[in-house]
Length: 88
Image 1 (tube, rainbow, N blue to C red):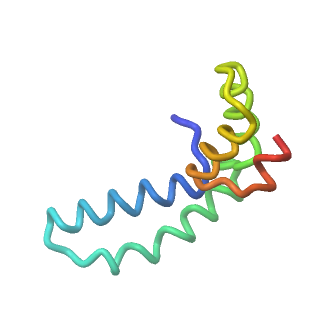
Image 2 (cartoon, rainbow, N blue to C red; image 1 turned 60 degrees about the vertical axis):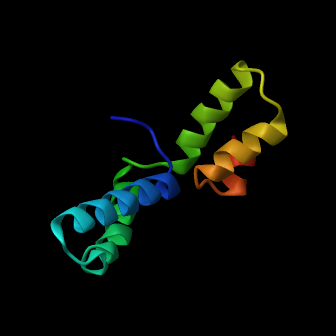
Image 3 (cartoon, rainbow, N blue to C red; image 1 turned 45 degrees about the horizontal axis):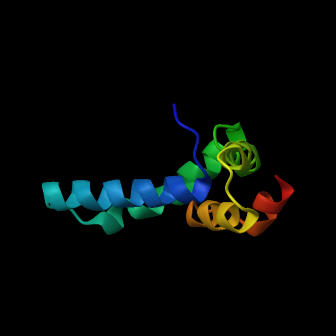
């Protein structure tokens, strides 16, 4: 539904797992190992593509008038590799 980088998706899902486990009284360590294979499967199927995400975000941030350094910083915070950002 929403575009995201694989690093950002992992951060969001980790937070949701920890919050849900705290609410239900379960151990998050039982569920956290399931994240990496899920994200890998999404990347392989094309649901997650960091290069495409970086390309779209760089264009949007450039239209907002942000500097190159500001764009690098924002996308790094979203979990994108420097190579994906500079390629975009």
